[in-house]
Structure formats: structure tokens, C-alpha cells
Amino acid sequence: MKTLRFLLCLLLFPVVEPAAGAADGPGAVDYPGAVDYPGAADGPGAVDGPAPVAAPVPDPAPVAAPAHVFYVSIARVKWNVEESRLDVSVRIFTDDLEEAIMAEGGPRLRLWTGQAREDRDRHVSAYLLSRLAFRVNGQERELAWAGMEDALDATACLVQITNVDRVESIEVENRILIDMFDTQANVMRFEVGGEKKYVNLSKGTVRGTVRFGF
Image 1 (cartoon, rainbow, N blue to C red):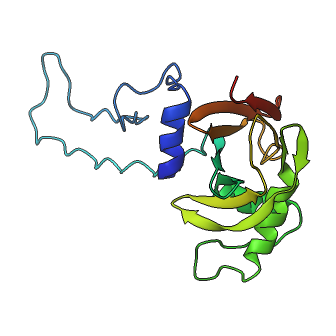
Image 2 (spheres, helix red, strand yellow):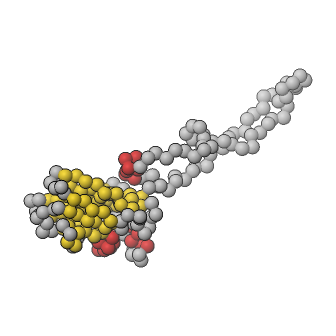
Image 3 (cartoon, rainbow, N blue to C red):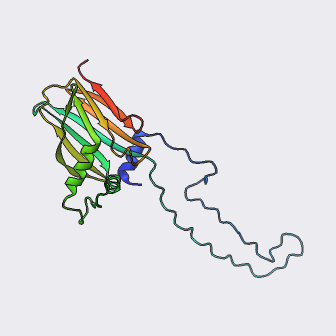
């Protein structure tokens, strides 16, 4: 499990208890077919002889790491009052983002590697802007692509909404990865004039509204 995904799961979700019947200790392995050595009788008349040589126990086969359980994106929306704009940063796990783009017929982008495609911004921005929509103060607003950054196991996608001189309400629709993973959670964090608010969106609830100054 990737580092950032693991940390997010610890922060946002409860710990999953192990299933019944799980081994009592880490790495405990039961080996079936234990061998009984002939001549090792317990009762009288046991024959003395050379001590039996235990057969070497093979190392357990490596167990593949389970697929991650939780799918999460985190968006931060902050009002830049000096520039009169909303700065939006959306962190999406890079492997999930690439899988979603390929599911729509796009290429493998190989983000943040030496083989990354030159047109990667075009594909990522097209996907993001097709899944994210904002209404500010009741008016639908256009998102402008501002680039992306490497964020450990994630990709931070940056967009902006310009000409925002006041913020009373923000309505957001977030469908990022919703059609890919049934358990996808899209966490939205808002910061306007010192007020901080949160909205948790999912497949069942893709829209949310926050109000400020009330």
C-alpha cells in the first residue's frame, strides 16, 4: 500500500478489524502435513536409535500485498482575496488518475517518470474539468487549468476561478473517479476569509454547498 494512501486511510477512515480466524501473530503460518517420524514411540519398548533428522521447512511463499481498500481524492479551495480568485488544488492518486484516463480511451501517461508523455497536461486537464464544476454566489463559473505537480503517490491538479471579489456561497459538483470505484470518496476543504468548512462527497452524493459569513 502506498505511503500517502495509507496515511489518508488512517486519518479519514476507521481501522478495519481482522477477519475471524486470522493468525494470532504477524506472519504466523500454519504448515499442513506435519511429518511423524517412525520409531519415535512414546511408550515402553521404544527403540533407541539415531535421532531423526527434521526435514527442512520451506519458506512460505510470498503473499501479494492486498489491493488498497479506500479510494480518496482531496480538494482544497482557498479564496485569494488579493488576486480576487479561488485557487483549487485537487490531489488524486496518480495510478487511479491514469487508470481513469485510459478507461476513457486515453493513453498511459506515465506521470512523474522519465517516460511521461509530452501531452500529459492536455489529458489530465480534460479529465479533471469534465468531472468538476463550481457555482459561486449562485453563478456557474468556469475553471481555468493552472498545471499540476508531483505530490508523492498523488498528482496535485491546479485550477483557478478568476474575478471572485466576494464569496458568500460555493456549490461544487465533484465526480472524480466516481464511475471507476464504488467506494470513491472526494473530500472538499474550503477556506474563505478565515472560515474553514468541509464537504465529503461520494457516489451517492456528488454535490455539496457551503456558505460563508452567516
